Structures are given as C-alpha cells and as structure tokens.
Image (cartoon, rainbow, N blue to C red; front, side, top):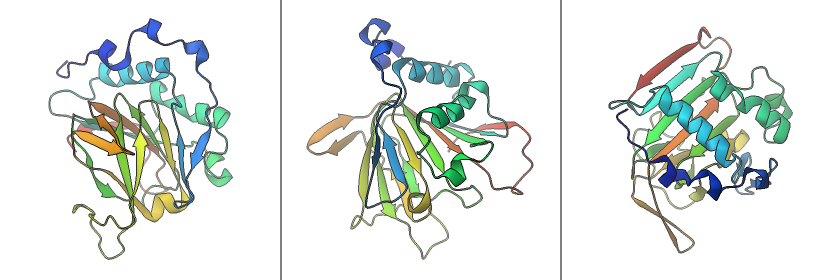
Length: 232
C-alpha cells in the first residue's frame, strides 16, 4: 500500500489498553451556543477504532493520490454496525424523527487527511437529510464552527469570520453529531495547520481519518450500492 502507517505508533500495543475498562455508554456533551451539536468523547474503544481503520485501509480506499471515498446505498458491514451501535448506546443522540428512520444512514464519506491538511468551512449539501455523524480516527484536530454565510452560494472561499467561531477538539475515537441548528445554521471546517492550540495546550497533528455518515433525501438519486474514490 502507498500509505505506510505505523499502527503501533499511532494506537499503541494491545497490552497498553484494557478493553474491559472501556465504558460503552460515554456521556454526551452538548453546547448551549449551538443547539444540535453533540460530542461523545472516546465513544469508540481502542479495538473499534483499530477495526474500522484497518478495514478502510485494507479496502484500498486511500491508494495513490486518493484521499476520499464515497459510499452510497446499503453500507458495507464494517460501517453498517455503527447504526445499531448508536441506537443501542445513544438513543438520544438525535431527535426521534431522525432516530426512527430506516436506515439511519445510507451514505458515507471517508476522508484521509495527511499531517497539516484541513477542509474548507462548509454546510453539508441540502440534498442530505438532517442528522450527520462524524467519527474521528488516528489523530486529533480542532474543528471550527462558524455561523453559516447567508450571502453566498459557494463555500469554496474560506470563512474567516472569527467573531463567533467555536472550536471543538476532536480526538481519536470521538463521535460528533450535527442536527437542527448545528447542521443547517453553522458551518464546520478544519483549518490547515501542523499544530492546534486550545486552552494553552499545543497538539501536533498526524495522519487523520474521518468517517461521516448521512442520509440522502428521498428522490435525490437511485440508491444502488456504489463506491467512488477520488481526491478532495
């Protein structure tokens, strides 16, 4: 494979983590300033992170210059387990209108960020329904939330308005949920930089993978299972 990853360096050896000590039900952190934004810190166990990351790499989603893959339709088993996991462990993560839909998600975006890379601040396309789940793997980063720009149809230009920005620290195994105002009225993005700073703490970035789960609105396209691999 073209992406050489030192798994032990990133995750530690098996004897450094005791899975029995991992709690299945982590508290959900909410943010009064951004309704619908919810964070579960260390939601995925060490083993769950390893299994998901290995599955992504082993299926050659990130080879050559490819750093993004999109999966539509019925999700593969190595991702599909996340839906019942959410329903069983965090039934209040989204409102019941979202939690009761079947399937909960039918589209996944898989992104690999090399050290220092980010993504332009944006609101996810309206072709997707409310309720977005982001799983962070391998490396920490800061995701910045900003009020959505109302006077532009394009988010290719970076939002530099810091007057009401809100930084969220995402660590490996964290799960972030966006619904309601957090999904529609706030942009989310990751600044491109090698080191993040929060509360006086400096955090060096490494290679990071994110798994974003969404659901297409009915009628947007035929839901035949498909996978596309590309550069962002």
